[in-house]
Amino acid sequence: QVQLVESGGDLVQPGGSLRLSCVLSGSPFSIYAMGWYRQATGKQRELVAVVTSGVNTNYADSVKGRFTISRDTSKNTVYLQMNSLKPEDTAVYYCNANFVKTGANYWGQGTQVTVSS
Image 1 (cartoon, one colour):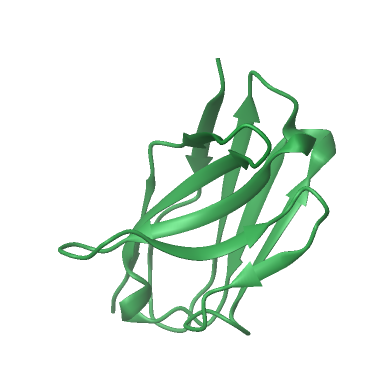
Image 2 (image 1 turned 120 degrees about the vertical axis):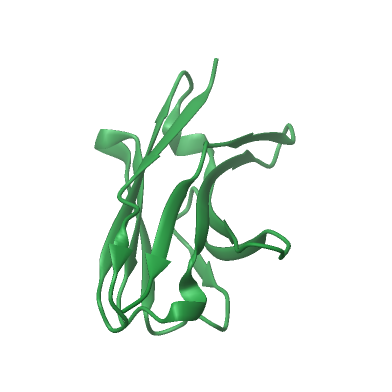
């Protein structure tokens, strides 16, 4: 059974930084495109960043230049480095694993990021 476990969410002041981590277990990590999504209160879940199995990356316009997604296959982990955080980045951040060939899609339980002074 595939499991995704996120960590790293916290309360941080505007302009601060956080690094989120997500560990995948139960399946070969390298076959999945890994992504981070977020959902703010009262809003739809939105894509933040994705890194393919081939290590190509894509970002939402709102986070380009501030966030960096990376993956470490040796640790079955995907990271989201978030710099220059803004109050509008406040949301629950979810890790996602997607295997395009089969449509298999998995979600973590979410981690809360709050940006406030």
